[in-house]
Amino acid sequence: MIIINILHIGIDDTDSPDGMCTTYLASQIINKFEENGIELVDYPRLIRLNPFARFKTRGNGGVSLRIPNDNNVDLAKKIVLDEVEKLSMFDCDNTNPGVIFYDGEITKEMEDYAFKAIYEFITIEEAEEFGRSIGCEIHKFKKGRGIIGSIAAISLPLEDYTFELLAYRASENYGTKRQIDYESVYEMDNETFPDTFENIDYSENYIAIEPKTPCPVLYGIRSNTVESLMKAKKIVKVSEHIVDWCIFKTNQHTDMHIQKVNDISSMKQFGCYEFIGEVKNKPTIIDGGHMFFYLFDETGEIECGAYEPTKNFRKVVSDLRPGDVIKVYGGIGKQNTFNIEKFQVIKLNDIEYRNPICECGKRMTSAGKNKGFKCKKCGNKIQSNEKVPISVTRFLKNSQFYETPVSARRHLSKPLCRMNYN
Ligand code: ATP
Image 1 (cartoon, protein in one colour):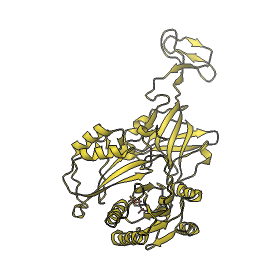
Image 2 (image 1 turned 90 degrees about the vertical axis):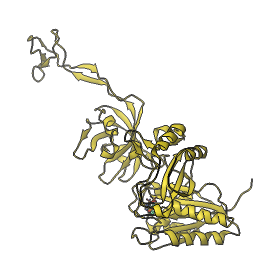
Image 3 (image 1 turned 90 degrees about the horizontal axis):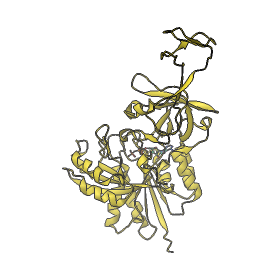
Image 4 (image 1 turned 180 degrees about the vertical axis):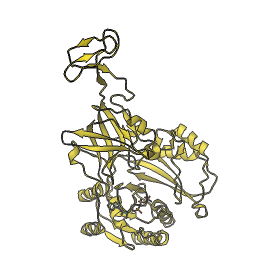
């Protein structure tokens, strides 16, 4: 076996809501590498971190690149630092780039750090101390917050992973309507789903490969394989110039942010979990269209929400009734409510207890506390207080999964079409 000594490069926090994208910056670096004969080891990586991180621009993603640690390393480092200096959105207060170079093995403690960056919050000081302790070369621009994500981007192991093909626009088109032929996106989805996924939200007629921000990305197609991305790229038609494109290996759509817990009481705010609970009350909708209900177990209860942007998913949730047992996946946000990303029905409560039916065919009413039932039509009375079980027809089905629509899905959420992966 040939062991190549590798230089890991981590880059994060270069963009702002007004423009740029760390993946575009990475693609520019890769072009410069190519011009100088520097080849990447494996695909560039786009690593999504804690979805609740406070200073994220959009999807909290960091990028890592790997190159052979040879004579070209000094040139490679210069290219990276020059491009970050040239392209980062320094005018934005919240843009604080961080670059990491690391040439050792990825150790268990680095992997643990990366998972911490997905599950919890890390300070700049903590990241810097950790980076120094493992021998990273650290470059901070302004506050340098990006080092938090950069160290995580180089350290995260990818057992389950997907790919994203990102096509980039000419700079003169930034901020203008993207010239994508939507018909061709439908055709691409038709030809390549489920190898590609998250292309279209059919319920909303929403083209999900098209970003809505003024960034350099023209479109992004997500997939399990590089082959299907190449096929998809051939099908999607655009009538503007694609200046560049790049395929990233990523933890998107792997559920890596989700931690399995056995009881409700062990969950914390700003964590993402998978747990089983029993429905306490019928879901109710409030002004603004958000839907809420409680799940409980023997250790406690938590309010669960299907928010307005989840659109028709709320219809599905509204079929839940007390006594249903479900496994939910999602995260506890600002309001301390569990924001549902998807759920699986473990056991439906399809029995309802109703007053008995009288011999005359009319449903009886209570005759008073512990006084049995009486019939208002024929006056018949029965002594027993026991209601009778009847089975209720349910829209939901046992064992079935239900998920939020593509338009409301997190980058890290595993869609149902990928549930058999890992
Ligand atoms: P994009 O949509 O292009 O991916 P973004 O949403 O990734 O942008 P960034 O500009 O990268 O946003 O800002 C996120 C910031 O949060 C970075 O500085 C990153 O280092 C930091 N960060 C990432 N994970 C954590 C964490 N777990 N705790 C604290 N800070 C974090």
